Image (cartoon, rainbow, N blue to C red):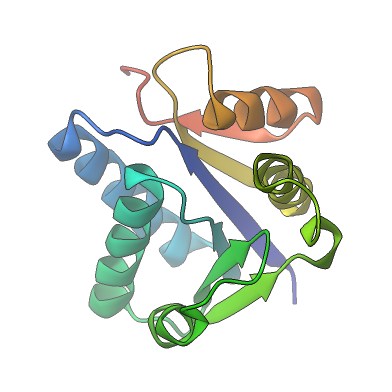
Amino acid sequence: MKIYTVSFFGHRKLYDLRQIDERLSQLLKELIQTKTYIAFLIGRHGEFDEYAASVIKRVQNELGSDNNDLTLVIPYTVADIEFYEKYYDNVIILEPAEGVHPKRAITLRNRWMVEQSDLVIVNVEHSKGGAYTAMKYAEKNNKKIINLCDIE
């Protein structure tokens, strides 16, 4: 079975929740209804990560999670791992990122997520920060990218 992998990156602060919610919900429903199996990979370092995870959970509740899962990818061990294990379908702690500076560990985690992905969904409004860097890395690796901030 081909697993279609989608990763998410966005800035720490969100400004237009309604637009993000509408676009992300529609996109997730389309993916769940058209793909055999989808692995959603997400971090937890800002408002976008938390909000995207909540939208994924809401869509899973609506459409089911038989053909998809939500995986939290963290760059190092955290104290409250039990909370995350209850909320997410899976939790991955990236071993290569263990022991390096936390900011570097997040960059390594983001690169790993991009490398696993068929699609990268971003909420990038400006040209700085980790989400922007992850988006540029995805471009460099010829990944399909959807920026929720782009007006269609």
